[in-house]
Image (cartoon, rainbow, N blue to C red; front, side, top):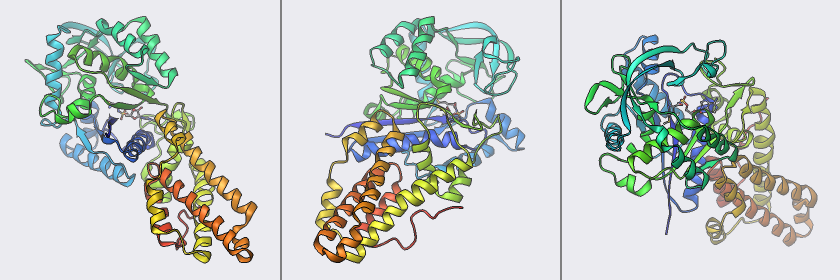
Amino acid sequence: MSKTFYITTPIYYPNAKLHLGHAYTTIVCDILARAHKLQGDEVYFLTGADENTEKVVKAAKEAGKETKEYLDEIIKNFKDLFEKLEITNDQFIRTSDEKTHWPGVVEIWKRLEKSEDIEKRIYEGLYCVGHEAFVTEKDLVDGKCPDHNETPQLIKEENYFFKLSKYTNQIKEKIKNGELEIIPESRKNEILALLERGLEDVSFSRPADGMSVGVPVPGDPSQRVYVWGDALTNYISALGFGGDDELYKKFWPGVHVIGKDILRFHAAIWPGMLLSAGLPLPKKILVHGFITSGGKKMSKSLGNVIDPIFLIDTYGAEAVRYYLARHISPFEDGDITLESFKDAYNANLANGLGNLVSRVMKMTQDNTGGLKEEKIEKLEKEKISEEFFQYLEKFEINKACDFIWREISEMDKFIQENQPFKIVKTEKEKGQEMISSLVNRLYSVAQMLTPILPETSSKIKELIKQNKTPEKPLFARKD
Ligand code: MSP
């Protein structure tokens, strides 16, 4: 029986174009989604945009546009990028979508209220718009939020609070016993340490006059649901929770992939909300590091972003997927420069993979009739290495890639040491056997590449089917 697998990206703030950091999260999810499909699972993959935030209103104003017009344009831009990157999301949720998203937010609010976890209080604190969260003095450096380089606003207002503190122990227990798995271990420990200190209740609404977008609080339209309370709910509202919930029943709970900066929201606030609402917690939260550029988090506020479109136009989308999958460690920060990108491209795509395909295909085209159709069908059904999938299961995408590239170098080495192209001239049968075995191995490389470089994988399979050398190299060298 096929299993179901639900995977989500965070929903992105549409206050600027997406950069390589956002592309990273999305590509990681796409690789995992495709890998599960390859294993026969029924997959649902969600991504989207976090639109109910003042940042967006501000960005629209700065661009001299109406919020809606601004949003529609930038969302088109997001979708175009995802299409270019071959992202196979099943849905793109927009939290401004009153039909899809809002009923879920209303339903969850009502459930929190029913559990007596919502309470009105006066709140005074420092609010960082970059984080869309209250921060404390100790989070600041020289009075500014170091992540966003902004001075937080001092706010005093009446808000509804969510009694998150009440759930500290339950959340801790579920993370400890693995019911809610946090990967990697270091992030699990980080969140456990936070839980050890105890969670504080969180402000869960903002007065509507200070927040011009967002879902009105049920029964009190003078307030709107707090950005994160609203945003986190997307993971279930997208599946119809609060309305026609067929997908919800089928796919929830799922796996969230997030960056380390939003761990607390996902591993504390979100589980607290779900517990209060009487709903199952996510199965896993996979937490990745930051893509840095020049040693600093790539971010619009810091002005050091690399535009993925530039890389796609220069090197192709598959090269971007390759670099992010293999050369960024999923658990730590990884730096990227245009230089490191080009070097990796030339060494491992133009030379490594691209060259190997040309060499093997030239040998087989010149010296053999190619693989028989039945053989190809058999290869297509053959099980892909367990080891490869195990890496992906553990979220070690870079190691899964290393596994493939190890096979590529071993094949290179075999060709160099045994020179089948020479042997076939003197000992025809022996040489042909060697070549066929290389083609077989190339087919399994293509199989493993399916989730990572989907287009390259199909190209290689097609060449093998037609027993043809590529007309031009799969990856042209760049100088
Ligand atoms: N809107 C919230 C998420 C709500 S989810 C219910 C948000 N949006 S974001 O656009 O700022 O960031 C989205 C994701 O991109 C986060 O996981 C964040 O960690 C990731 N990245 C943003 N910059 C990044 C890098 N430089 N490197 C890697 N990922 C980073 O937070």
